[in-house]
Image (cartoon, rainbow, N blue to C red):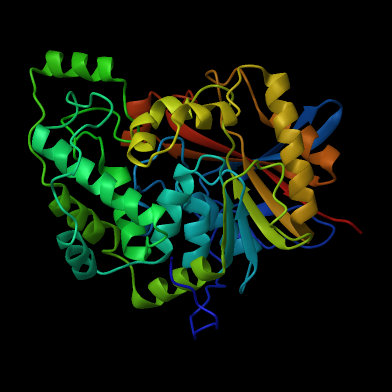
Length: 430
């Protein structure tokens, strides 16, 4: 069981606005400022006969290392912490509740926890909770080292059930199997505590990647697992064989990296948020655990059509955690049909309207797909409005390419910048 806090400790709460947003005032739409302090460029666009505002500019830093180190785990299809942080700082205060219905690696909820907000997060993929919840309960490197000493490096059964020899040295594979057995037994017995959960999270994150900090031989990208056949081709092309990796040492090293910028106040703030938080693994259109009119702000990014195949990307992580990756894949909406995708999103907005308090907000990142030929805001805006929200416009954050963006071939802006597209809604029930 993860630890729980029953009373609020004296933890600082960040209510200080950051440059980039002028507080919404009744009767007026939001006015955005760029990182240079100047008003964002603004124009209007027509959608089915209705006019909506569009804001353009750089609203948060493009620096990859300027957010908290606790965010730094590999996970495909995630936005930078600066995105939810921008909206959380400006549209919430105190212990108000922040939610993400497509939680992914937990960026929104962790950023909200760091800022002293209450949190709720959901993702139908059970890996999301495995990767997210433990980071609210941060151990010391010493505690992790002590626990790892209790975990054998040789399994009782040395059969992985699948062939992973193209990824791991035989001795590394034995250590992974031993850890997998240990965690499975602790979970089955109901004895998995916050240290076990942390180690599970770290190991899940370190399985495969492009550097010696991962358990595997070189593979790309670092946030998913290619197929066994693809890895064999990579090995042949690079004339490489999997070297031995000391998994226990690497997990302590990653713990040190994840916690290097965390202050004691932030640790206590995250623990409070995690203790009182909701971590759900269900359909985003049906979250009865979340009370009516309780959420002040939702910041999220949904699965975009069939661009990201979550079950394919995460098959090795699912194997390690005893999860049926095919069942997970079937439960996630990955369709090339905009009509089917829009129906799914419409159901989510109906649920978001139920749980959002009057005056609350939804910041819905829609991205650009198919090289900008499909603009998902054209589906998202009607879905949100039909559910009862008011749309206050489209915010387009434009930044120079990052190294990661270039790896993925992101070129969704001809001027050489990476664009986030966020539709902003507000609930106004009168």
